[in-house]
Image 1: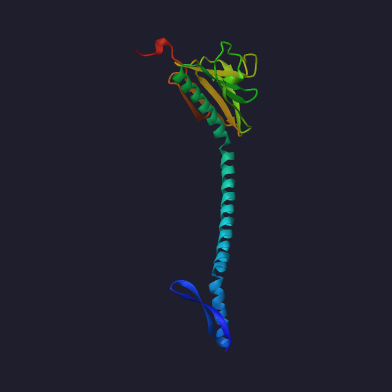
Image 2 (image 1 turned 90 degrees about the horizontal axis):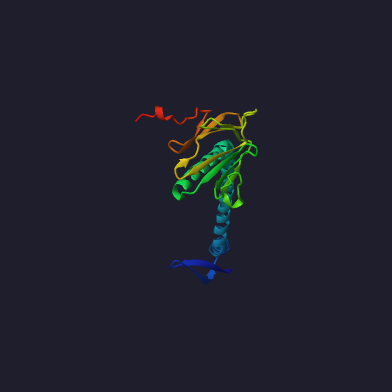
Length: 224
């Protein structure tokens, strides 16, 4: 009778028992049991690696889909995001001026298609110092500044002899906006949107369309 070495479980542990006599028919199953007992970790490791590969592939696919969807969403909301950045800059200027008592200004540049939020520190309002700039953003072709109309009916961006400037400035102090007005933006389909700067209630809102500008009322029109 041939002699073989077989791994046998004993008390939850793997024990080695020598000189287990096997027949020729029993030899092969015994060897298989021995290999399984000794190489169990290898079998489990291979199975886990396969699962890991599948999980990694699935995560990669989900990540790609998420990136594609996110890119599509950002592409669609590019105009809204850029317009909202301008609204946020206007709101920041008003809030900071009210809290600190300092003057802030949002400059709308129709030539360079950008806006600049700065803290005014010099009497010369035409000079913008580098250290005054809080934020500066350029618009893409998804969002275009069309024109600016102040509530004293002075318009910026109109082609013709009546044009005053291609830069408009909204200044805010502790008491609120020096002037109100509206900023007309257009998306890539040339649809107009209005950013209304209301100096009566100090709000800044973004709405679709070229909306009518709320004008300050004369003293004789205000009820007492």
